[in-house]
Length: 135
Image 1 (tube, one colour):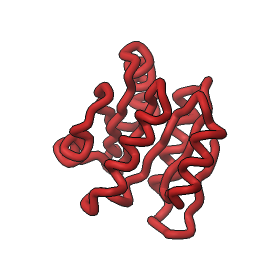
Image 2 (tube, helix red, strand yellow; image 1 turned 90 degrees about the horizontal axis):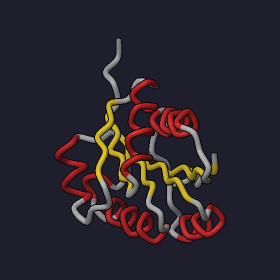
Image 3 (cartoon, helix red, strand yellow; image 1 turned 30 degrees about the horizontal axis):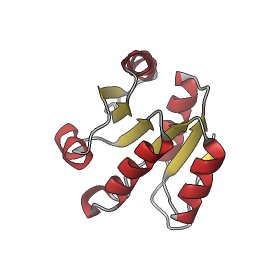
Image 4 (tube, rainbow, N blue to C red; image 1 turned 30 degrees about the vertical axis):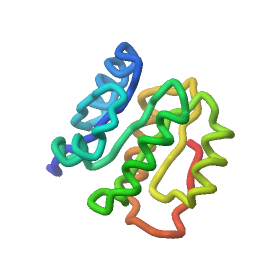
């Protein structure tokens, strides 16, 4: 049996984080949830995250966290799922960054959608041609 993948979930709504944590665990992921943090790079390393899920109420919060991840060479290719209530703006922003290994899920969403996005990202090797995908 393969090892469970570890996901770092950043969510600024504790109730949503709790529900999403339970759902992702049911789908076979180890999940560590935390609120919005500017110490994201340190948390990724400390938690040995295989992927990141960002669900911040304001997309610019998710955007700044995404930039922190991509600007650090140690985890610049970490798979990221972004959940957004402004998917068109988020999509345009991520495309302008030529972001790869990122999937965008519009709200409302289900835990199963996030799990499928993680499954997809974690099965794809890093590639500069990998586009932003809306799930």
